[in-house]
Image 1 (cartoon, rainbow, N blue to C red):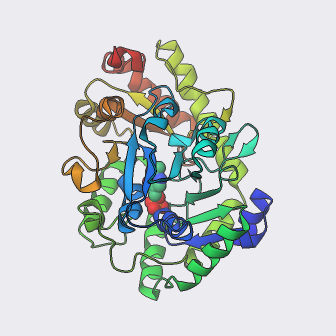
Image 2: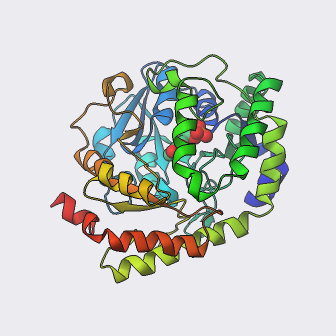
Length: 387
Ligand SMILES: Cc1ncc(COP(=O)(O)O)c(C=O)c1O
């Protein structure tokens, strides 16, 4: 898979390291950067809690920054306020596949001698000012989990053009354990089952899978404890298995097709939303959006999900809270409710429409029919909520 990724990024294989999950790649990056107790990492207050966890595992502190409701990315104008002499890294996330305005982030990082790490978990396949996401920051990581731009079931990798960081990451990669035969077998079974899952079975399947993985009964994206306490689970620091690498090679072989498909489905949603006087997601000049997820804001999310389930409409729930999917005990993750009012409000109303390869054009139209029937439940723009 290193060879295929190196080809995609026009890099050398030595600049890529492979890990069991994206969060493990992020942990390896922080270790390579020498992040230690007392350091502070700036990240958006609209992310997955597994991004905050590796920071805390190393004794450092996540410092959350509120978001720009237009892009769902970190509000760059709020970053400098959060910088002090403990700050080491700005984590630049490309939420739903849209890169933040990285040049502005580099300017701040340069002024304060900080490292920029790109969280490319959603943004692989997209571009910032003509350069592929993941290749721009000092070091980046991607995820190849089920819902990501290309999937190996679970998985992740780090990319860097910096020779020193690359050498450290390779050393770290060597010390991580290999996934067990059992873990590989379970993953194969899940991949087989997932391949046969149509959109009709989405709701029962997703509920069962989440329950099983939360209770550690099946190999899940997150183990139960990870979502309760920021304590590193046993066996966290693992490399990528052969099963994942083989699948990754296959998927990378059709990456152009996968990205084109997402764009085509997103264009259907955009056209239909415009007809309904709903503002589509923002697409700035500086970036090419991957539309990993297509965000929409609804008045009452619980009611909307009940309606969707009844109508067999596949919908996503990213991000349910500023540190998804945490809805209580925020302080355990150094998140203090009330600090980021925009992210807190948006995360109460956001849903996402799917764009992945199993979503046909007909099914996308079917989704938009459902949206039309429930137009009164949908906000025309984030401004309606935030005014
Ligand atoms: C923004 C973001 N970054 C990182 C991750 C972690 O990726 P992984 O599940 O591969 O550890 C996720 C997980 O969904 C995510 O949403």
